[in-house]
Length: 145
Length: 200
Image (cartoon, rainbow over all chains, first blue to last red):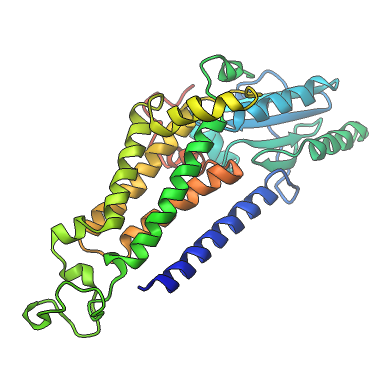
C-alpha cells in the first residue's frame, strides 16, 4: 500500500473512533424507559429495604474506573432527599445478579419507584440534572400509583 | 450495601495519569497502523516497488503473480524486521510494564514528574486496578497481532494495532475504559474473577 491510501485509511480510523466515542458519550447518562418494570426484591440483593419514595440501585465491579465517582454523585443525590435510598451492589462476584438485570457495563443505575419497580435505567454515568428530574417525578407521584 | 467508601482513599491514583499515558500510547499506535499499512503486512507480492524477491520471483515456490501477499513468502527474519512489527513489540513491552509495575511505567513517571506539578491537584482519586487491567487487555490484543504477523497472516498487525488504538484513544479523549467494560463481560462469561466463591 502506498502512502496516500494508507493516510486515507488512517483518517477513516480516526473518524470512526471519534464517532464511536461521541456516540457512546451521547448515549451515556441518557435515561432509558423502555425496560421491563420489574419489581426488585431487596433481599435478593442483600439489602434490608428499599427507599420509601425511590431507590437508586447502582451496580459496580472492582475494576470499574467510573464507579466511585458515580457512587459519590448518587449518594449525594440520595442524601439530599428524604425517602430516597442509594444502594451500591458489587456484582464482581455475583454474575447471577449481573445476568438477571442484563448488566453489560458498569456503572449501571436503575431508578426504582416506591414499590420497588424499575422505572428508569442509566448505562454509564448518569446525567445529574436528568437524575434530579427522575427523582422529582417519582417523589411527586401519588402513593397509590 | 454502600461499601465502596474505601475506593477513593489515599491508595488511589490521579485519574488523569492513565489518560495521559493512553494519549501517548494512542499516538504511537496510530504511527504503527501507518507503518503497518505501508509496510510488509499489507504488501501484495505482485508489487515490484518494494519487494525483496523482485529480483528472482520465479525461484520462489509460493510466488503467485499478481496475487498472494508479500508477507506469506517473506522469511521469519523479514517479518520480524518490519518497522511496524518492531514498534508494536516496543508497545507490547510498555503494556507489559504497565501491567507488572504500573508505578514505574515510563508514561506514568513522565506524567508525575512533568505534567502533574503544573496541574491543579486531582478532584478525586481513582482505583489503580481498572487501568492496570486495561493494560493487560491491550497487551493481549497487541500480542495476538504480533503472533499472527510472525505466522505470516496479512493485515493482522495493522488491525490489532488499530483495535488497540481505538481503545487507547477512547480512554484518552473520552475517558472511556473499554478494557474495564470488558471485565464485566469476561467475568459474566466465567473467564475471569471466579477465583473466589460466588456466594459473596
